[in-house]
Picture (cartoon, rainbow, N blue to C red):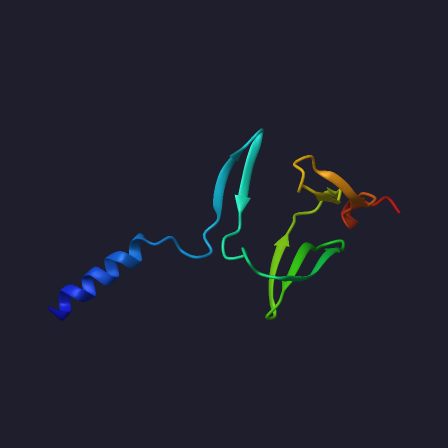
Length: 106
C-alpha cells in the first residue's frame, strides 16, 4: 500500500509545471515571455548596468532576491512609466533613450 501511494505522489509531481519555467505567449510580430515566480513579489529597486562587456537589468525584490536580465551588446532602452487604470496608457514620465556602452561613439 505504501508503495502505491509513493507512485501516485511522484506521478502528481511530474504533471506540475516547474515553478520558474518561462511561459511563452504569442505577440504581434514576435513573442512575449513571462517569468513565473515573480508575481506578487515587491520590487525595491530596478537598476540598468551598461558597460563595454556587460549589460543587465536587475530587479531587486524584498527578501534579498533579484532577477537579472543579461542583454547582449548593441541596444537602446526607451523607458516610459504609464498609468493604465483608465485603459488609455496615460504617460506619467518618460526618460531620454539609454544607449548601451558598446554603441557609444565617445
